[in-house]
Length: 565
Image 1 (cartoon, one colour):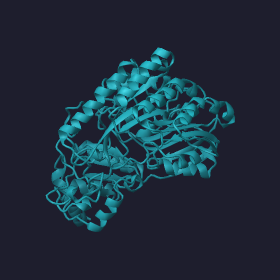
Image 2 (cartoon, helix red, strand yellow; image 1 turned 135 degrees about the horizontal axis):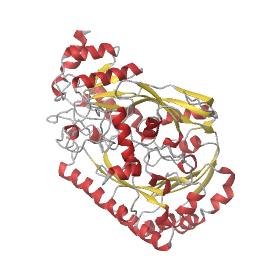
Image 3 (cartoon, one colour; image 1 turned 90 degrees about the horizontal axis):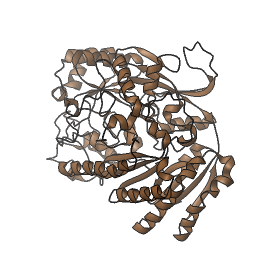
């Protein structure tokens, strides 16, 4: 075994944040039954020259990577891959191993003298198969000082699951799913009414979960992108869906977590035991309190949904203003009727699980039909047998954007901004102003506005009083100069300030927010932040887990964040 490990790890020793002896790596590898593996950047086989991991140039593997560079399904199961390219790179130093996202076969990105650098990709990862693997990783980090990050599929706009010189705890292979018609939380002494629930392993992606739900005649609401992990940062950050207005956020539906905390304890957190940790994991953010190995989430009967879809909308300024005015003027009524979905300048995709209200609900869409008739655009109104049937057919908004370097800024827009003609006009003008000159513009009607929550979640209360999750974004490529990247990030903050100014006291969704979100503690968690810090200090007093703008964040000047710009 030593000979194998000498070969496996020797190429990476110099790139680690600390010089760890081969014997220590061998000990860890033995403890996790040979599941300690080398992290190399996704595009490594395309580069003849590299700072680390020599001898991995492979034209055949490179061709497969080039052909799938923007394919989220191909990327999600690869430990060294991230959905956004900048989190594979060290942006501040331009140490990177990226292909041309506009043309992955372009040799200018990877041919000499271009050098593949490790960037922010962790040097090593533990392929987790059991709780003891996580315990061993935490113990190793505590002993050696090597930082740890938690990664499943790599969907992460904040870079929380990558870090230079780190050890990744990779949960992507925990794929078990179980359905129970009468589930009760563990360890409860009080009477509990059983409920239908699904137990979900930490590596399960939404497409896998949706297919399981369809096979078992149940509805499991979730995100738009097929390869987002169902138990990680999605649910722990809140987790929105097109059905949030009726079924709540992912955090609302989370009934129980099995989690390994940094002390090495394996805990069950629910409404009856470790209730403070349960509260923190239901919205306090991923990568912060422990490694969730399993989530139990509510299951609902398989229910027909009604959908309204419009695409091919002209995007000239006058038409966009007219379209957005229809949206602004009707968003409050649509939310009250149970609608939710996704809007961009060129399309409208709404869904409602209250199919019994088909006639009444679609009547409220008449202003949209009038707009469509005026602009020769077709509005489709359909009934689907299930949420999955709709999800599988309707084009996804942020769908499979993968392999691009991009950053977002967002704001939760409260219902009060829609209540008067004056407030609607102001919102319309700001929306149009902020939207211009950005390649990414979304209005997500994915807030739990009509859902009656149990008040046991830690997401910002602003989520529950808002109608919109409004998003803008910028995209850049492998060769974009650092100064331009910095200008793009600054522009996102400045532009979203216009929306912040007309929504005082609101906030943002941590998973799709500004990298430099002002007053992030209040924006993400509102009044809950101080209590979350107390819970963080209880379960992770040494802050073995730390991530960008997470609860207990150690600050942008900490060496762990040297790659952020």
